Image 1 (cartoon, rainbow, N blue to C red):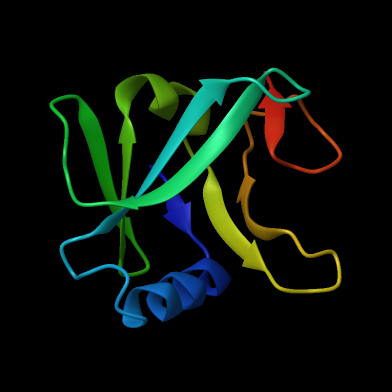
Image 2 (cartoon, rainbow, N blue to C red; image 1 turned 90 degrees about the vertical axis):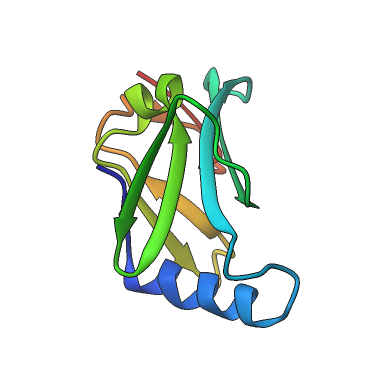
Length: 108
């Protein structure tokens, strides 16, 4: 399961209300090689499902990830911070053994 915090839900709804995306779009998250800790998070709006996608809905938000990425993201919560640290969207991943200082990459 992938989870969506209230803060992330509010920001996603705000972005979707701007008209850049439609109600057919969902949030796609994935993990790729790269970043200073070895693995990087990716987050985008998408409207095309793929054959091996894992689909979750939490807190009224549809979140989709590919099967390989889900192995890294299982039980992760998507959050949003607009505070002084300026994180924006970030992932609270219980599977990460360490993360980089910017929070955009991790390792297991």
